[in-house]
Image (cartoon, rainbow, N blue to C red):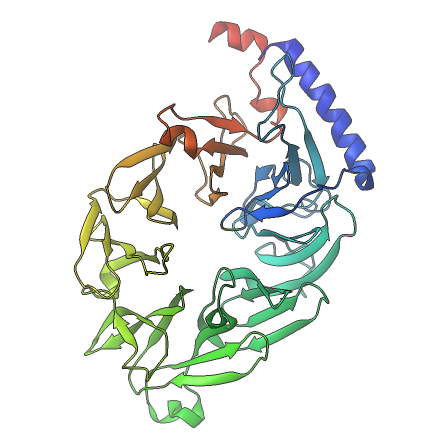
Length: 446
């Protein structure tokens, strides 16, 4: 990029940053409705993309970082016919800062509810020791034009899992921090602890059926259950998100259950059987044992990244994929046969339909368990693995080619272009730090 281009870019961005930060209410509200990219990292809203401009780890934050964040804040880009537009000097157009709150972290979370955006940001409240626990999460809501910011809740510890479920037209944030199960009514701001002293929990990532109203969780045995006399095993319970009714499902002596997922009308979990621990699924349509389906022949200690794929268009349950003996494999639902997909050790990012999206040191790929043909979607090497997908584009944080700061910026990569054989197409969404832009002299000598 030439100096004139850099100057033009920064004059434009400086104006936009000043104007939209000072006059947030002048941001144009999207006319249409929003669709959430999977995993709640990015929000595709009408012809805008909302995203965290830069990734920052909770461990790297210091006091003041989340007071009026700039590059790390919430940004959006205006699309023209679904495309990012550039001026004659190749400067990205339509980039606006929405809010000076950090949103690109380990616990990133962003959803649309009507004309409001619900999102998570690192806590800025002081602890009793006058320290800021950035690993705790604060949930907020605001209008999609950046106005009306309101804090809903701040967690007591680090988030282990979170979801936004719209049940009977009421949006709830469900949050588990390793000890407490909490629901937050986005409309009213009411907060309710559904369970305490929780040792494990699973709940749906989106509400589809009545089954998804239940959260399945475990607690240790108390004195009443025989802990004082050495009885082992934990207790599996469920709580209805709406009614808040809690029921005990199972408490067998010596048996430990670990929640894994709630998906496709099934609760997925591991439990001990004859001294070993295996994966199971259960829809509880009859007795616990009668409706239980064993999913793996391998014991759970030999398995990592166990993930149910989902269901097809006819409602048939697709296989579960997992890593076994350093290989990517799958088992059909209800079958104990292990089928190899890849012989290499990879990092599973997420699943979509029959595709598994995964990463290696050289980039991001996808592969179908059906044809086992891998496709590379991203060819950048330095990236974060909290990846979002809106059905066409992957959104991810990565370092740009001329990076000197160690910053990770938001990019998107077009899955369709790879699928159609037109090659890898990656676009930068974020505003770059000035130290990560190569100047004219450096470019001429490179």
